[in-house]
Amino acid sequence: MKPAFGTLRICEDAGALARAGAGFLCDLAASNDGRTIIALSGGNTPKPLYQLLAQEPIKSRLPWDRVHWVLGDERFVPPSDPASNYGMARAAFLSHVPAPPQNVHPVETQGVTLDEAAKRYEAMLKGLHGSDRLDISRPLLNLTLLGLGEDGHTASLLPGQPVLQERKRWVAPVPKGREEERVTLTYPALDSSAVVAFLVSGEGKRDILDKILSGEADFPAAHIRPVGEVIWFTDRAAAGRWA
Image 1 (cartoon, rainbow, N blue to C red):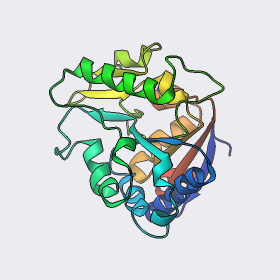
Image 2 (tube, rainbow, N blue to C red):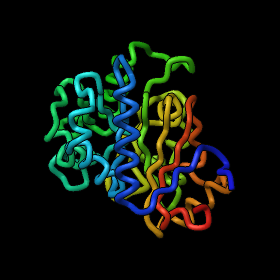
Image 3 (cartoon, helix red, strand yellow):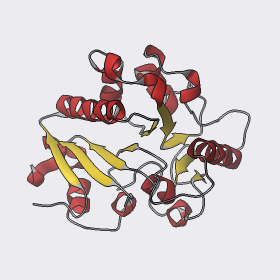
Image 4 (cartoon, rainbow, N blue to C red):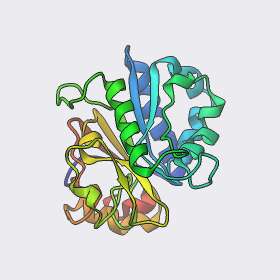
């Protein structure tokens, strides 16, 4: 069977998924002679992948000085909060590797309002990109890692929220839809990716993954259409009948 969009890469289990994803990330960055901008996902699924980035052989192969790390979304909490996506990434790998501090770009979540945080992060991305406009020939992001919620959300593009209609801003506040407020990259920013890699693991994701791979469009994740390619990294438990 062929997915409605993207390429499917099925791994035996969650550990194999983490290894495949980490290897793919490393190969992509290592093969790029210039700067590489990678957008990180939050949640539980990518954590084992991140931990592998801080271990050999990947730690020595990654060109840390040429890679910039941004966030696909963030909960509006301090970095020390267990819910912080940046806090999780920092604990999993960023604090254990030679990543230059100026190459790591967390969302400001203290001393600013939610809307200010979104505006400042957008300004940072525009500075990093070197332009106020997104150009199909020059993607903002070299690699974007995304998860998939059981309700079909990805990043903080939550079902039923106004952010789903945002087409001008690169980063937007998401004040409702979850217990904590959030900041997220919008469709225009996420779609300005050379590669989008969805990481999907576990039986709990089987139903929603099947619907999206089958072409059902009533979910935020089903509307990701990057200028580059989409790869679905999934384990057999999530893949179900697609395995």
